[in-house]
Image: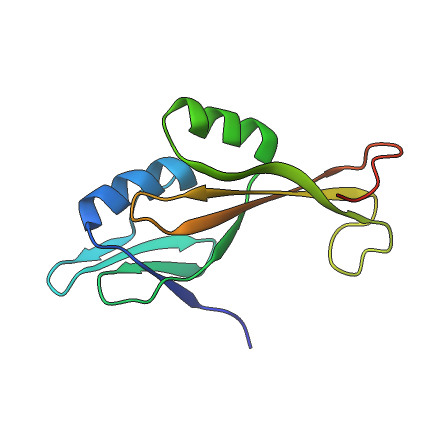
Amino acid sequence: MRLIQVSQHAEDLGRAAAFYSELLGVRPAAVFDPPGLLFFDLEGVRLLLERGATRSLLYLEVPDVRQLVEQLRSRGVEVVDPPRLIFSHVDGVLGRAGTDEWMAFIRDSEGNTVGLVSQLAAEPDAGTA
């Protein structure tokens, strides 16, 4: 079994398409309006932005959340929670051993909170936040 699709509420599909195209670095895979559906392909998992969908909390893996949040902030994106160290992966159970997991949260164009996650090389004596 594998995850094939997640959905997120989007009231304005044009605005959401612009926001997510820039954030994800990909163009929409398909738009069906009506009825109000916008799809992105994220390496085989469909992200559906839909007028009728409920709000969800999406977590997106990014290369370096610390750098990305600064870029997003400079473009006027609301930062709900700035980047911080969440966990150090020493055993490889939930992430690559020897990495630190960093997270931040932003607000998308539709008022949804989106989590951004990076697993970066562990910093000596960084501990957990």
